[in-house]
Length: 487
Image (cartoon, rainbow, N blue to C red; front, top):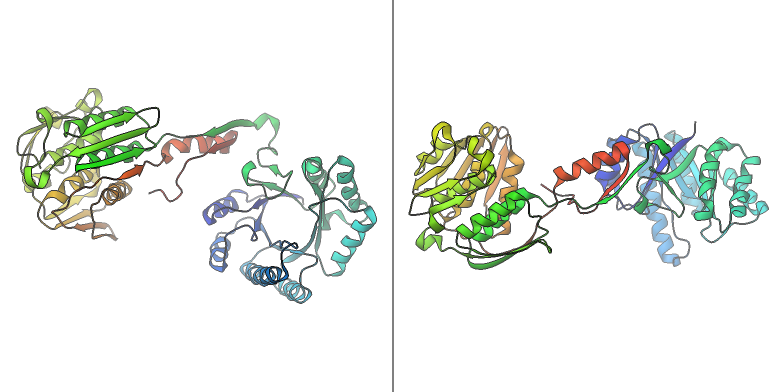
Protein backbone atom coordinates (compact mmCIF):
# COMPACT_ATOMS: atom_id res chain seq x y z
CA UNK A 1 0.00 0.00 0.00
CA UNK A 2 1.40 3.40 -0.99
CA UNK A 3 2.16 5.90 1.74
CA UNK A 4 3.28 9.47 2.21
CA UNK A 5 6.72 9.57 3.81
CA UNK A 6 7.60 12.78 5.65
CA UNK A 7 11.32 13.54 5.46
CA UNK A 8 12.86 15.06 8.58
CA UNK A 9 16.12 17.01 8.39
CA UNK A 10 17.58 19.83 10.51
CA UNK A 11 15.00 19.22 13.23
CA UNK A 12 15.36 18.61 16.95
CA UNK A 13 14.96 15.17 18.52
CA UNK A 14 11.76 16.32 20.24
CA UNK A 15 10.27 17.41 16.92
CA UNK A 16 11.13 14.10 15.25
CA UNK A 17 9.59 12.12 18.11
CA UNK A 18 6.44 14.27 17.89
CA UNK A 19 6.11 13.72 14.13
CA UNK A 20 6.67 9.99 14.61
CA UNK A 21 3.71 9.94 17.00
CA UNK A 22 1.57 12.13 14.72
CA UNK A 23 1.98 10.34 11.37
CA UNK A 24 1.15 6.86 12.61
CA UNK A 25 -0.70 5.97 9.38
CA UNK A 26 2.06 7.28 7.15
CA UNK A 27 5.88 6.97 7.25
CA UNK A 28 8.82 9.03 8.49
CA UNK A 29 12.22 9.38 6.85
CA UNK A 30 15.11 10.21 9.17
CA UNK A 31 17.71 12.06 7.11
CA UNK A 32 20.70 11.27 9.28
CA UNK A 33 22.96 13.25 6.93
CA UNK A 34 20.98 16.36 7.95
CA UNK A 35 19.89 15.57 11.51
CA UNK A 36 22.27 16.17 14.45
CA UNK A 37 21.72 12.60 15.68
CA UNK A 38 24.23 10.25 17.20
CA UNK A 39 23.53 6.77 18.55
CA UNK A 40 21.94 8.03 21.78
CA UNK A 41 19.42 10.21 19.92
CA UNK A 42 18.57 7.30 17.63
CA UNK A 43 17.90 5.12 20.66
CA UNK A 44 15.50 7.70 22.13
CA UNK A 45 13.72 8.10 18.79
CA UNK A 46 13.17 4.40 18.25
CA UNK A 47 11.99 3.91 21.83
CA UNK A 48 9.03 6.08 20.78
CA UNK A 49 8.52 4.39 17.38
CA UNK A 50 4.92 4.45 16.17
CA UNK A 51 5.25 5.10 12.41
CA UNK A 52 6.92 3.16 9.63
CA UNK A 53 10.52 4.44 9.52
CA UNK A 54 12.97 4.89 6.66
CA UNK A 55 16.48 5.73 7.88
CA UNK A 56 18.60 7.48 5.24
CA UNK A 57 22.16 8.78 4.95
CA UNK A 58 23.21 10.52 1.73
CA UNK A 59 26.85 11.38 1.05
CA UNK A 60 27.94 14.28 -1.15
CA UNK A 61 30.08 12.63 -3.84
CA UNK A 62 31.68 15.97 -4.70
CA UNK A 63 33.58 16.11 -1.41
CA UNK A 64 37.26 15.19 -1.10
CA UNK A 65 38.05 11.49 -0.82
CA UNK A 66 39.05 11.77 2.85
CA UNK A 67 35.71 13.42 3.70
CA UNK A 68 33.74 10.81 1.74
CA UNK A 69 35.61 8.04 3.54
CA UNK A 70 34.85 9.51 6.97
CA UNK A 71 31.20 10.12 6.05
CA UNK A 72 30.84 6.57 4.73
CA UNK A 73 32.16 5.16 8.00
CA UNK A 74 29.78 7.36 10.00
CA UNK A 75 26.83 6.48 7.75
CA UNK A 76 27.45 2.75 8.05
CA UNK A 77 27.69 2.98 11.83
CA UNK A 78 24.47 4.97 12.25
CA UNK A 79 22.50 2.93 9.71
CA UNK A 80 23.58 -0.28 11.44
CA UNK A 81 22.42 1.13 14.76
CA UNK A 82 19.06 2.06 13.22
CA UNK A 83 18.66 -1.47 11.85
CA UNK A 84 19.26 -3.00 15.28
CA UNK A 85 16.87 -0.50 16.92
CA UNK A 86 14.04 -1.40 14.55
CA UNK A 87 13.97 0.80 11.44
CA UNK A 88 11.76 -0.66 8.72
CA UNK A 89 13.99 0.49 5.82
CA UNK A 90 17.44 1.92 5.25
CA UNK A 91 18.32 4.03 2.21
CA UNK A 92 21.88 3.74 0.88
CA UNK A 93 23.37 5.28 -2.30
CA UNK A 94 23.83 2.55 -4.92
CA UNK A 95 27.52 3.48 -5.28
CA UNK A 96 28.13 3.14 -1.53
CA UNK A 97 31.37 1.42 -0.51
CA UNK A 98 30.84 -2.20 -1.63
CA UNK A 99 32.19 -3.80 1.55
CA UNK A 100 30.02 -1.61 3.81
CA UNK A 101 26.98 -2.10 1.55
CA UNK A 102 27.26 -5.89 1.66
CA UNK A 103 27.59 -5.82 5.45
CA UNK A 104 24.60 -3.49 5.89
CA UNK A 105 22.46 -5.53 3.50
CA UNK A 106 23.14 -8.76 5.39
CA UNK A 107 22.50 -7.07 8.73
CA UNK A 108 19.21 -5.64 7.40
CA UNK A 109 18.05 -9.09 6.23
CA UNK A 110 18.72 -10.50 9.71
CA UNK A 111 16.50 -7.83 11.28
CA UNK A 112 13.67 -7.95 8.69
CA UNK A 113 14.68 -4.49 7.50
CA UNK A 114 14.32 -3.69 3.79
CA UNK A 115 17.07 -2.04 1.77
CA UNK A 116 16.41 0.91 -0.56
CA UNK A 117 19.26 1.58 -2.97
CA UNK A 118 19.14 5.06 -4.42
CA UNK A 119 20.48 7.05 -7.35
CA UNK A 120 20.28 10.87 -7.17
CA UNK A 121 21.20 13.28 -9.94
CA UNK A 122 20.98 16.91 -8.83
CA UNK A 123 21.92 18.31 -12.24
CA UNK A 124 19.67 16.66 -14.81
CA UNK A 125 18.02 13.50 -16.13
CA UNK A 126 19.99 10.78 -17.98
CA UNK A 127 18.57 8.97 -20.99
CA UNK A 128 15.91 6.29 -20.62
CA UNK A 129 18.51 3.61 -21.42
CA UNK A 130 20.89 4.88 -18.74
CA UNK A 131 18.11 5.08 -16.15
CA UNK A 132 17.17 1.48 -16.89
CA UNK A 133 20.80 0.36 -16.49
CA UNK A 134 21.06 2.11 -13.12
CA UNK A 135 17.83 0.54 -11.89
CA UNK A 136 18.95 -2.96 -12.97
CA UNK A 137 22.28 -2.52 -11.20
CA UNK A 138 20.50 -1.53 -7.97
CA UNK A 139 18.31 -4.64 -8.11
CA UNK A 140 21.38 -6.80 -8.79
CA UNK A 141 23.03 -5.43 -5.65
CA UNK A 142 20.18 -6.78 -3.53
CA UNK A 143 17.81 -3.80 -3.31
CA UNK A 144 14.30 -4.53 -2.04
CA UNK A 145 13.29 -1.12 -3.42
CA UNK A 146 15.09 1.03 -5.96
CA UNK A 147 14.91 4.81 -5.73
CA UNK A 148 15.73 6.84 -8.85
CA UNK A 149 15.63 10.61 -8.42
CA UNK A 150 16.77 13.07 -11.08
CA UNK A 151 16.39 16.81 -11.68
CA UNK A 152 13.86 17.98 -14.27
CA UNK A 153 14.37 21.28 -16.07
CA UNK A 154 11.17 20.78 -18.08
CA UNK A 155 8.21 18.34 -17.79
CA UNK A 156 9.55 16.03 -20.50
CA UNK A 157 12.48 15.05 -18.28
CA UNK A 158 10.11 14.22 -15.43
CA UNK A 159 8.07 11.98 -17.76
CA UNK A 160 11.29 10.20 -18.78
CA UNK A 161 11.88 9.15 -15.17
CA UNK A 162 8.28 7.99 -14.79
CA UNK A 163 8.70 5.66 -17.80
CA UNK A 164 10.68 3.38 -15.46
CA UNK A 165 7.34 2.17 -14.08
CA UNK A 166 6.74 0.49 -17.45
CA UNK A 167 9.84 -1.71 -16.99
CA UNK A 168 9.89 -2.56 -13.28
CA UNK A 169 7.41 -3.60 -10.61
CA UNK A 170 5.90 -0.35 -9.27
CA UNK A 171 5.77 -1.62 -5.67
CA UNK A 172 9.58 -1.97 -5.72
CA UNK A 173 10.34 1.37 -7.41
CA UNK A 174 10.37 4.99 -6.31
CA UNK A 175 11.05 7.17 -9.37
CA UNK A 176 10.44 10.91 -9.73
CA UNK A 177 12.17 14.18 -10.55
CA UNK A 178 13.22 17.05 -8.29
CA UNK A 179 12.78 20.71 -9.09
CA UNK A 180 9.71 22.76 -9.91
CA UNK A 181 9.21 20.92 -13.20
CA UNK A 182 9.28 17.63 -11.34
CA UNK A 183 6.81 18.38 -8.56
CA UNK A 184 3.88 16.66 -10.24
CA UNK A 185 6.02 13.60 -10.98
CA UNK A 186 6.04 13.00 -7.22
CA UNK A 187 2.26 12.67 -7.19
CA UNK A 188 2.26 10.62 -10.40
CA UNK A 189 4.79 8.14 -8.99
CA UNK A 190 2.36 7.42 -6.17
CA UNK A 191 -0.53 6.91 -8.57
CA UNK A 192 1.63 4.49 -10.58
CA UNK A 193 2.11 2.31 -7.48
CA UNK A 194 5.30 3.58 -5.84
CA UNK A 195 5.46 2.43 -2.18
CA UNK A 196 6.28 5.95 -0.93
CA UNK A 197 6.03 9.59 -1.94
CA UNK A 198 8.39 11.86 -0.02
CA UNK A 199 7.04 15.10 1.42
CA UNK A 200 7.93 17.61 4.13
CA UNK A 201 6.04 18.60 7.25
CA UNK A 202 6.86 22.31 6.81
CA UNK A 203 7.69 24.30 3.70
CA UNK A 204 10.83 25.87 5.20
CA UNK A 205 12.26 22.46 6.05
CA UNK A 206 12.09 20.64 2.73
CA UNK A 207 14.92 18.20 2.09
CA UNK A 208 14.76 18.47 -1.71
CA UNK A 209 13.62 20.95 -4.35
CA UNK A 210 10.00 20.64 -5.41
CA UNK A 211 9.03 18.64 -2.34
CA UNK A 212 5.35 18.81 -1.42
CA UNK A 213 4.28 19.74 2.09
CA UNK A 214 1.72 18.28 4.46
CA UNK A 215 -0.38 21.36 3.68
CA UNK A 216 -0.10 20.82 -0.10
CA UNK A 217 -1.43 17.29 0.30
CA UNK A 218 -4.58 18.31 2.17
CA UNK A 219 -7.86 18.34 0.25
CA UNK A 220 -8.71 21.86 -0.92
CA UNK A 221 -11.73 21.89 1.38
CA UNK A 222 -9.40 21.57 4.41
CA UNK A 223 -6.75 24.12 3.47
CA UNK A 224 -6.43 27.25 5.58
CA UNK A 225 -3.15 29.08 5.21
CA UNK A 226 -3.00 31.07 8.44
CA UNK A 227 0.49 32.39 7.72
CA UNK A 228 3.27 33.28 10.13
CA UNK A 229 2.46 34.62 13.56
CA UNK A 230 4.62 36.45 16.07
CA UNK A 231 2.95 35.79 19.42
CA UNK A 232 3.19 38.31 22.28
CA UNK A 233 5.80 38.05 24.99
CA UNK A 234 5.13 36.40 28.35
CA UNK A 235 3.48 38.85 30.72
CA UNK A 236 4.40 36.56 33.66
CA UNK A 237 8.09 36.99 32.91
CA UNK A 238 7.76 40.67 32.03
CA UNK A 239 6.06 41.54 35.33
CA UNK A 240 8.72 39.64 37.29
CA UNK A 241 11.54 41.30 35.34
CA UNK A 242 10.13 44.82 35.82
CA UNK A 243 9.94 44.33 39.60
CA UNK A 244 13.44 42.84 39.80
CA UNK A 245 14.89 45.75 37.82
CA UNK A 246 13.12 48.30 40.05
CA UNK A 247 14.73 46.87 43.21
CA UNK A 248 18.30 47.65 42.14
CA UNK A 249 20.42 50.43 43.60
CA UNK A 250 21.30 52.80 40.76
CA UNK A 251 21.63 50.01 38.20
CA UNK A 252 20.24 50.17 34.67
CA UNK A 253 18.19 47.36 33.11
CA UNK A 254 16.87 47.15 29.55
CA UNK A 255 13.98 44.79 28.87
CA UNK A 256 13.32 43.97 25.21
CA UNK A 257 10.63 42.03 23.30
CA UNK A 258 8.01 43.52 25.61
CA UNK A 259 4.30 43.66 24.79
CA UNK A 260 2.47 46.33 26.74
CA UNK A 261 -0.63 44.57 28.04
CA UNK A 262 -2.50 45.97 31.05
CA UNK A 263 -0.60 43.86 33.60
CA UNK A 264 2.75 45.07 32.24
CA UNK A 265 1.56 48.67 32.31
CA UNK A 266 0.59 48.32 35.99
CA UNK A 267 3.95 46.64 36.73
CA UNK A 268 5.63 49.75 35.27
CA UNK A 269 3.44 51.85 37.59
CA UNK A 270 4.54 49.77 40.59
CA UNK A 271 8.19 50.21 39.53
CA UNK A 272 7.67 53.98 39.49
CA UNK A 273 6.04 53.78 42.93
CA UNK A 274 9.21 51.98 44.01
CA UNK A 275 11.18 55.11 43.01
CA UNK A 276 12.56 53.68 39.78
CA UNK A 277 13.15 55.82 36.69
CA UNK A 278 11.26 54.10 33.87
CA UNK A 279 11.25 54.83 30.15
CA UNK A 280 8.96 52.84 27.85
CA UNK A 281 9.14 52.55 24.08
CA UNK A 282 6.01 50.79 22.88
CA UNK A 283 7.10 50.84 19.25
CA UNK A 284 10.41 49.11 20.03
CA UNK A 285 8.89 46.88 22.70
CA UNK A 286 11.42 48.10 25.23
CA UNK A 287 11.47 49.20 28.87
CA UNK A 288 14.52 50.90 30.42
CA UNK A 289 14.59 50.90 34.23
CA UNK A 290 17.04 52.45 36.70
CA UNK A 291 16.35 51.42 40.28
CA UNK A 292 16.87 53.75 43.24
CA UNK A 293 16.54 51.43 46.22
CA UNK A 294 19.09 50.98 48.99
CA UNK A 295 17.03 48.46 50.90
CA UNK A 296 19.82 47.03 53.06
CA UNK A 297 20.62 50.46 54.52
CA UNK A 298 17.32 52.35 54.31
CA UNK A 299 14.56 49.80 53.83
CA UNK A 300 12.19 49.78 50.87
CA UNK A 301 11.03 53.20 49.69
CA UNK A 302 7.43 53.41 48.43
CA UNK A 303 6.09 56.64 46.95
CA UNK A 304 3.01 57.82 48.95
CA UNK A 305 2.93 54.41 50.66
CA UNK A 306 0.73 52.87 47.90
CA UNK A 307 1.35 50.06 45.41
CA UNK A 308 -1.41 49.62 42.81
CA UNK A 309 -1.44 46.22 41.09
CA UNK A 310 -4.30 47.01 38.68
CA UNK A 311 -6.00 43.69 37.90
CA UNK A 312 -2.88 41.55 38.23
CA UNK A 313 -3.10 38.97 41.00
CA UNK A 314 0.58 38.12 40.52
CA UNK A 315 1.62 41.74 40.91
CA UNK A 316 -0.46 42.16 44.09
CA UNK A 317 1.04 39.03 45.61
CA UNK A 318 4.57 40.22 44.81
CA UNK A 319 3.86 43.59 46.40
CA UNK A 320 2.56 42.23 49.72
CA UNK A 321 5.79 40.49 50.88
CA UNK A 322 7.88 43.32 49.38
CA UNK A 323 5.97 45.82 51.52
CA UNK A 324 7.42 44.02 54.57
CA UNK A 325 10.80 45.58 53.70
CA UNK A 326 9.39 49.10 54.21
CA UNK A 327 9.68 50.88 57.55
CA UNK A 328 6.26 52.47 57.03
CA UNK A 329 2.80 50.95 56.49
CA UNK A 330 2.18 50.21 52.81
CA UNK A 331 -1.23 49.88 51.15
CA UNK A 332 -1.43 47.32 48.38
CA UNK A 333 -4.47 47.91 46.22
CA UNK A 334 -5.89 47.06 42.82
CA UNK A 335 -8.72 47.84 40.42
CA UNK A 336 -11.95 46.34 39.14
CA UNK A 337 -12.00 42.52 39.26
CA UNK A 338 -8.96 42.26 41.54
CA UNK A 339 -10.89 44.00 44.31
CA UNK A 340 -13.33 41.09 44.31
CA UNK A 341 -10.75 38.30 44.67
CA UNK A 342 -9.26 36.89 47.87
CA UNK A 343 -5.56 37.71 48.21
CA UNK A 344 -4.88 36.17 51.60
CA UNK A 345 -3.18 32.81 50.99
CA UNK A 346 -0.20 31.91 53.20
CA UNK A 347 -1.06 34.76 55.60
CA UNK A 348 -0.30 32.69 58.70
CA UNK A 349 3.25 31.91 57.52
CA UNK A 350 3.88 35.54 56.57
CA UNK A 351 2.57 36.68 59.98
CA UNK A 352 4.91 34.20 61.68
CA UNK A 353 7.77 36.02 59.95
CA UNK A 354 6.91 39.52 61.04
CA UNK A 355 4.20 40.75 58.66
CA UNK A 356 0.90 42.14 59.83
CA UNK A 357 -1.56 42.19 56.91
CA UNK A 358 -5.05 43.64 57.31
CA UNK A 359 -7.57 43.25 54.48
CA UNK A 360 -11.04 44.65 53.94
CA UNK A 361 -13.96 42.31 54.52
CA UNK A 362 -13.67 38.79 53.02
CA UNK A 363 -9.88 39.23 52.66
CA UNK A 364 -10.08 41.49 49.62
CA UNK A 365 -7.76 44.33 48.62
CA UNK A 366 -6.83 47.00 49.61
CA UNK A 367 -4.47 45.38 52.15
CA UNK A 368 -2.40 47.31 54.66
CA UNK A 369 1.00 45.77 55.34
CA UNK A 370 3.15 46.73 58.30
CA UNK A 371 5.85 45.08 60.34
CA UNK A 372 9.30 43.90 59.35
CA UNK A 373 9.74 40.78 57.27
CA UNK A 374 12.21 38.29 58.71
CA UNK A 375 13.71 35.32 56.93
CA UNK A 376 14.57 31.82 58.05
CA UNK A 377 12.54 28.67 57.57
CA UNK A 378 9.21 28.75 55.72
CA UNK A 379 6.74 25.94 55.05
CA UNK A 380 3.88 26.29 52.57
CA UNK A 381 1.11 24.09 51.23
CA UNK A 382 1.43 24.01 47.47
CA UNK A 383 -2.29 23.72 46.81
CA UNK A 384 -2.75 27.33 47.94
CA UNK A 385 -0.90 28.67 44.89
CA UNK A 386 2.56 29.95 44.11
CA UNK A 387 2.21 33.69 43.54
CA UNK A 388 2.65 34.80 47.16
CA UNK A 389 5.68 32.50 47.39
CA UNK A 390 7.08 34.19 44.28
CA UNK A 391 6.54 37.55 45.97
CA UNK A 392 8.40 36.31 49.04
CA UNK A 393 11.31 35.21 46.84
CA UNK A 394 11.69 38.82 45.66
CA UNK A 395 11.81 40.12 49.25
CA UNK A 396 13.89 37.56 51.14
CA UNK A 397 17.27 38.27 49.47
CA UNK A 398 17.34 41.55 51.45
CA UNK A 399 16.70 39.85 54.82
CA UNK A 400 19.78 38.93 56.85
CA UNK A 401 18.92 35.30 57.64
CA UNK A 402 19.68 32.14 55.66
CA UNK A 403 16.43 31.02 54.04
CA UNK A 404 14.87 27.61 53.55
CA UNK A 405 11.49 27.42 51.81
CA UNK A 406 9.67 24.09 51.83
CA UNK A 407 6.63 23.69 49.57
CA UNK A 408 4.55 20.57 50.18
CA UNK A 409 2.73 19.10 47.18
CA UNK A 410 3.43 22.06 44.86
CA UNK A 411 0.76 22.41 42.16
CA UNK A 412 2.24 25.47 40.40
CA UNK A 413 5.91 24.55 40.43
CA UNK A 414 6.67 25.87 36.89
CA UNK A 415 5.80 29.39 38.04
CA UNK A 416 8.19 29.10 40.99
CA UNK A 417 10.87 28.08 38.50
CA UNK A 418 10.06 31.16 36.39
CA UNK A 419 10.63 33.34 39.45
CA UNK A 420 13.92 31.60 40.27
CA UNK A 421 15.10 32.15 36.69
CA UNK A 422 14.38 35.89 36.94
CA UNK A 423 16.15 36.11 40.31
CA UNK A 424 19.20 34.49 38.75
CA UNK A 425 19.09 36.82 35.74
CA UNK A 426 19.04 39.85 38.03
CA UNK A 427 21.89 38.74 40.28
CA UNK A 428 20.36 36.71 43.11
CA UNK A 429 22.16 33.45 43.89
CA UNK A 430 19.94 30.49 44.75
CA UNK A 431 22.21 27.91 46.34
CA UNK A 432 19.92 24.94 45.95
CA UNK A 433 16.46 23.99 44.80
CA UNK A 434 15.28 20.47 44.50
CA UNK A 435 12.14 18.38 44.21
CA UNK A 436 12.00 15.35 46.48
CA UNK A 437 8.81 13.37 46.05
CA UNK A 438 5.91 15.63 47.01
CA UNK A 439 8.18 18.35 48.42
CA UNK A 440 10.07 21.19 46.73
CA UNK A 441 12.78 22.96 48.70
CA UNK A 442 14.66 26.21 48.02
CA UNK A 443 17.74 27.37 49.94
CA UNK A 444 19.62 30.66 49.64
CA UNK A 445 21.43 33.27 51.69
CA UNK A 446 20.19 36.70 52.72
CA UNK A 447 22.06 40.00 52.45
CA UNK A 448 21.92 39.93 48.66
CA UNK A 449 20.96 42.67 46.21
CA UNK A 450 19.41 42.73 42.74
CA UNK A 451 21.64 43.98 39.95
CA UNK A 452 20.77 45.40 36.55
CA UNK A 453 20.41 43.19 33.50
CA UNK A 454 19.64 43.35 29.80
CA UNK A 455 16.82 40.85 29.41
CA UNK A 456 14.90 39.74 26.31
CA UNK A 457 11.46 38.52 27.37
CA UNK A 458 10.58 35.25 25.70
CA UNK A 459 7.34 34.76 23.81
CA UNK A 460 4.31 33.23 25.44
CA UNK A 461 3.65 29.53 24.78
CA UNK A 462 0.07 29.71 26.01
CA UNK A 463 -0.71 32.36 23.40
CA UNK A 464 1.16 30.34 20.77
CA UNK A 465 -0.87 27.24 21.58
CA UNK A 466 -3.93 28.76 19.92
CA UNK A 467 -2.10 29.19 16.62
CA UNK A 468 -0.35 25.83 16.81
CA UNK A 469 -3.69 24.07 17.27
CA UNK A 470 -5.16 26.15 14.44
CA UNK A 471 -2.38 24.89 12.19
CA UNK A 472 -3.05 21.28 13.15
CA UNK A 473 -6.80 21.56 12.64
CA UNK A 474 -7.00 23.94 9.71
CA UNK A 475 -3.95 23.56 7.48
CA UNK A 476 -0.74 25.43 8.15
CA UNK A 477 0.49 28.09 10.55
CA UNK A 478 3.96 29.21 11.54
CA UNK A 479 4.90 30.57 14.96
CA UNK A 480 8.23 32.31 14.56
CA UNK A 481 9.55 33.34 17.95
CA UNK A 482 9.18 30.54 20.50
CA UNK A 483 11.89 29.38 22.88
CA UNK A 484 12.06 25.58 22.83
CA UNK A 485 13.78 25.25 26.21
CA UNK A 486 11.20 27.47 27.88
CA UNK A 487 10.34 26.77 31.49
